[in-house]
Image 1 (tube, rainbow, N blue to C red):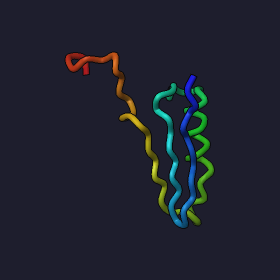
Image 2: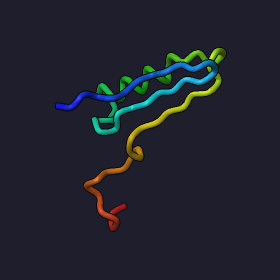
Image 3: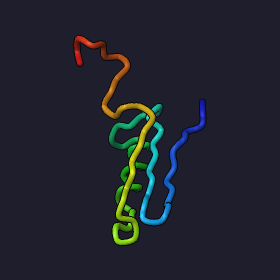
Image 4: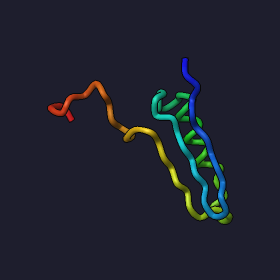
Length: 69
């Protein structure tokens, strides 16, 4: 199993929250809990900008062809 690549990084007034979208993003999953924690714990007085990123477009399924999307 590959290592998950997710992290939070603070840089002055910016907070970067990067999720590994190769793993389960559904509610209750470890990845979901990571994202929820990242969003809930940012100090908006100190860091006015929250940048969230993931490897793939969120909500996309590779099992879905163009006809069903």
